[in-house]
Amino acid sequence: MTLRTSVEITPTGAALGAELRGVDLRTLDRSQFDAVHRAWLAHGVLLFRDQFLADAALVAFSRWFGDLDQAPIQESGRRCVDGYPEIYVVSNVVENGVAIGSLGAGEAVWHTDMSYLPDPPKASVLMAREVPATGGDTSFCTMYGAWDALPAALRARVERLRVKHDGTYNSGGFVRAGVTPSDDPRTAPGTLHPLVCVHPETGRRHLYLGRRRNAWLEGLPLAESDALLDEIWAIATADSLSWRHHWRVGDVVMWDNRCVMHRRDAFDPATRRVMHRTQIKGETRPSPT
Ligand code: SIN
Image 1 (cartoon, protein in one colour):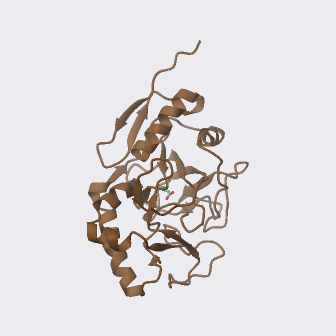
Image 2: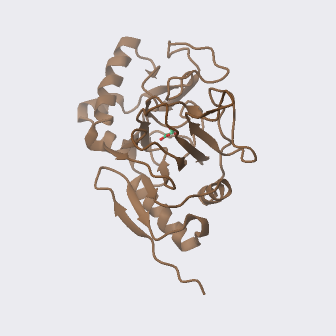
């Protein structure tokens, strides 16, 4: 008989995030999954150290949460890991003149994954295979906290608005494959989503911002939309609402892509950073309050 340890949950002490210990993601059972799932809903971001998941195990763990999306097309055109259409590579490494992954070594600005689509993924799972000693940290911020932090007058003003989520640029500033660049958010490719959503599993209200670049509040003149978005983004990305993670090889981090944004620090391009990512399909569209 296998003796299982119970899942130990240690909140980061920041506005979101928790580290989970006592669980091997390769051999999860139903009761452990239930504990992980509850912790994910409660904390928004989960860190599991020393997991070293091979690609098959990363896919198998991710599938506990639902069906997986196919890896999106990268700016370099390459799509996925051979044999694993669900795995997207985030990396600055170039092999034989070809980038093996996406986002390079520069800063990746605050964003929500794939929110330029009508049906964005509900979760992302990132496994660290190679990391630089310094730089390349990933920060997360809570969109529940962002909604809670808005002054009442601002809440009333924006509550029913929709925001355009731009599909032109990825978070590294690269133009997505096949897209003609445009800096007019009103006509750029993308999707309008409600700015304020109700989380389908927790029932809590949160902001849904996507990316700042090329965002637009539907129906407003651009200058007015920009001023309002700048005000909201300054509140949403305050240090007090975020948690920063410094990676070790073998770390797995998963986040709730509906109510959490993330960004990545730049790092020395002469060093190697290789991350494998899966995404779990959203079961419902971002829905208004
Ligand atoms: C991402 O934006 O999905 C990647 C974040 C990271 O590489 O830390």
